[in-house]
Image 1 (spheres, chains in turn brown, cyan, red, blue):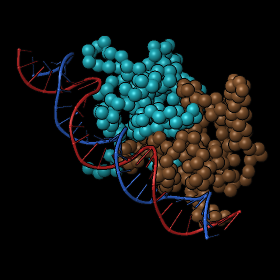
Image 2 (tube, rainbow over the protein chains, first blue to last red):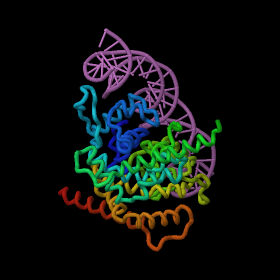
Image 3 (tube, rainbow over the protein chains, first blue to last red):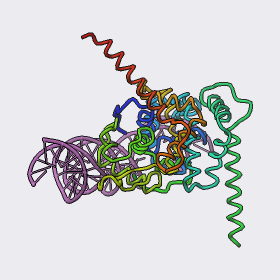
Image 4 (spheres, rainbow over the protein chains, first blue to last red):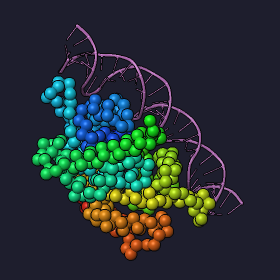
Length: 172
Length: 172
DNA sequence: TAAAACCAGTTTCGATTTGCAACCAGTTGA
DNA sequence: TCAACTGGTTGCAAATCGAAACTGGTTTTA
């Protein structure tokens, strides 16, 4: 995570912030999984992030302005991480990367269903989702209907379908 | 550049291929700068990539299917790197990342003008650009008009404007 | 024809980063 | 009182990065 000012190219500057193996994973879990606490991100991580890496990335993303950190009123030791507008603005990047990965890589169905919905929904859905994220993270007005709930439900349905198929394929 | 199969999530799998500081820089130079030879990528790199890193990333991107490599008939030692369809399909990802970087980071004007045009052009322009890349890299039919030429000309104009401004600001 | 420049990398090596595991001190709820 | 939970930190071995020098061969130039 060196801080080299290599060039003023937008792609390069973006990579100097997000160009590593974990930063976008952390942001993805906060954005799509609504993980807001350190232990929650650590325990529910599909990819098994280490606590020192998570601590480093959270600190870095706060420094860079993609996340904010505040104390949780309900517990003296709890910290709440929230997306800033800069973090919320990554929705189209996630949509593009998700669509690319879904097309060319060996994704699992239940984990790619959200990428599919996000891609099919297009910019109009992204904007609704971003409005919802502003509500959850920045105290903006809530949207008329929740995109996150749709994405999460589609994921759960796909997961349940797969588990049902696995059970029926495994005779007692 | 470890090859850990962490999860089947499209974002995670995409990061396992592109989640580092240099892979997308190399692809950017091939895609937007039409750099096709090793020395050309090395010498014209705005970010100053080291030769061992460049060699490693080219090899890796060929293995992963984003690039192909063939010998150059004009010179026994020359190798030509080309984008595959998988590489060309990254155009929307570059567009989204470029737009994000342009909005939130300290980009220089002449290097961000292409990102601006790509973002403003939207999916229709991206598709024209991808068709042009298929022509340049995969021997497909050429498009009616070149997007790359437009992007490159806009960059050169912006660069010339800045240099003119610098000269006029530096009295002899 | 000999030297110079060009070609795609490889090698070496010190500095940095990663990732695992153990650990910590304060807080909370039972 | 005590176990579980809180957001991390520390120590350490292994992997990776990155700058510079170098390689073996080809092509161009004087």
